[in-house]
Length: 296
Image 1 (cartoon, one colour):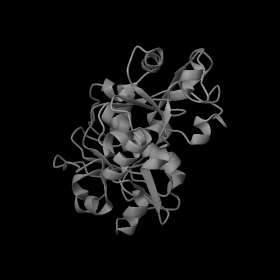
Image 2 (cartoon, one colour):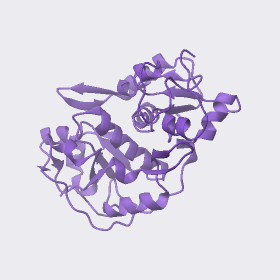
Image 3 (spheres, one colour):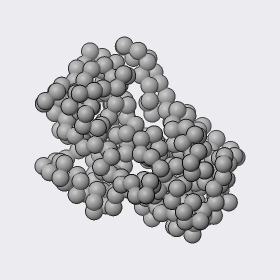
Image 4 (spheres, helix red, strand yellow):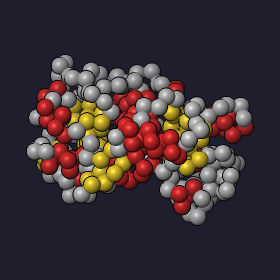
């Protein structure tokens, strides 16, 4: 049984757990298949009996000045409903299982889900290293479709403001009223303004931002996506941001891939004061008259 609803939940040993650990504690953990869409599991299968949740199911949207702002964190009440529908209880040890064979739209969705759980107070959560691909290789049971779930008793906790950055927080940094390093987690071709997403109005990056692409925090071995070690993640941050020792605000186009960089910095490298700009450049450019820069 891959999904456990029990008061005997264990404490996860860290933000990343391997398949062997989960197999050893399977009856005391609650596994959830998490990716952009169910078809991402076509090549790997789903963890047997574990439910599935897609990216669109745990994000929301609202009107902006120039159009609809999408890909935003939902209200605590809406997220609570999602978690209850997955059969999650407050004391569960949650293990998030991406498919494990791609970074964008899979590992990045797992980290966004992890961030939202931490943001609303659930600490007993980890991501399965290598996802279902590694689970299958370790002898875990897989299925062609996700499992069903009963109504859970999850309640959202108080929002942790330290993990969340809004547009006004970013504006304060740019205006000099707040001290923090803005970190752009997109591919360098987007940071340098050579291309942009169609839901971002303009090319370039936020003033004063420095690049740390999200893909640095994972490595692909034999087609399976694994996390960097804490030492490796710390070395990446030291190399890319050698003189930064204060708060960091990670952003991307929509707050999606930057959640992976947030996970790598905050959870794996164990850096303090790392937050995620939820709306990122999508909100920055469509919900106000704000520009991006190139070469600054």
